[in-house]
Amino acid sequence: MSDRDLLHPLASPATAWHILGAGSLGGLWATRLARAGLPVRLILRDAARLAAYRAHGSHLTLIEQDRCVQWPIPAETADGSEPIERLLVACKAYDAEQAVAALRPRLSAQADVILLQNGLGSQEAVAALIQPRRCIFASSTEGAFREADWQVRFAGHGFTWLGDVQDPAAPTALLDDLHTAGISHEWTPDILTRLWRKLALNCAINPLTVLHDCRNGGLLEHPCEVATLCQELTELLQRCGQPVAAHDLHSDVLRVIQATAANYSSMYQDVAHGRRTEIAYLLGYVSAAARRHHCTIPHVQQLHHRLCQHLAAKGLRSD
Ligand code: NAP
Picture 1: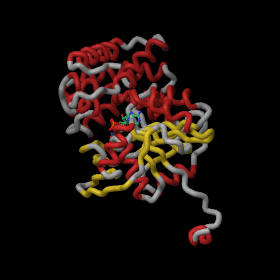
Picture 2: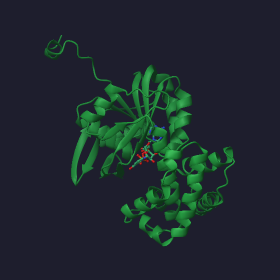
Picture 3: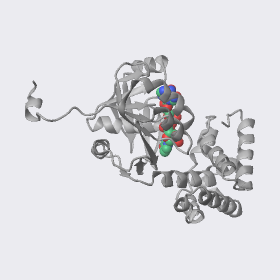
Picture 4: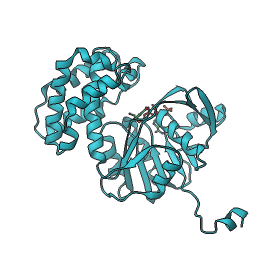
């Protein structure tokens, strides 16, 4: 028995955080959890990515206000053998289901799985795949981007809401870790409201910034287009049983456009860098919901169509 055990005879070992995807948000969470002394393991895409990480020195760098700190964090691929008690899914929405499927054999029966994906659709798919295990949905306003492989810049402080649509009881040990790591968060029984609201904000702003080739603030020159989309999105949210997410959507969209006027939206940046977008989990999800609820949203559907054509012309996928 060690001195530490004698001092804390009842202390149980901390649950390891397995983090699937060491990109922007995965890196941001991994480094802050590691900095707090919590056990973290990265799960990388394949053997080639693992070899690249090891060749780099098996550490992630967190850049905060031009201060760079390296955090050594062990990594593995999905076919490791250790059982997983807590999994943070930090890949893009279009990768989530397949990536979690590869890890399912390793998830313990009591595992908590936290989903950071933007939009809607991927969460339901993962929840169905891993049920009856606990699936926690998250919605975050934090901002991070990769300056290089294994190097993440904390670009915008924000807040993360977490919740479980099946069970309102807060997972206290997990939330304690977030507190220890300084990750601003709140547990909410209304996580779906948060996700729907963010989905609607993203649908009203991001595609237009791509099509008009502008920063968020550039949309102030297209007030009628924004207003029409907000009207249709409001109607759809109400039809989908999301009246709180629908409330005052247009004013909130205008507030976000003004507050982030100098920024390029995430979809704009994806397209500018020739990366696949998460359109299927934003406009794609909204269009499918409209069909299911027999709700007519012609301008949103036309926007979806125009965006798909724009992406195809650039050789980018629209699924
Ligand atoms: P990202 O920088 O592209 O990182 C995604 C990571 O997932 C990449 O490192 C990728 O690996 C990895 N990955 C993909 N498939 C994998 C697999 N099968 N196994 C292991 N790793 C896999 O994306 P992100 O910006 O962090 O975004 C993640 C999610 O968070 C998105 O849904 C996004 O909308 C949401 N979000 C992001 C932010 C932000 O500020 N970045 C804010 C709020 C919400 P490779 O490195 O090998 O490609």
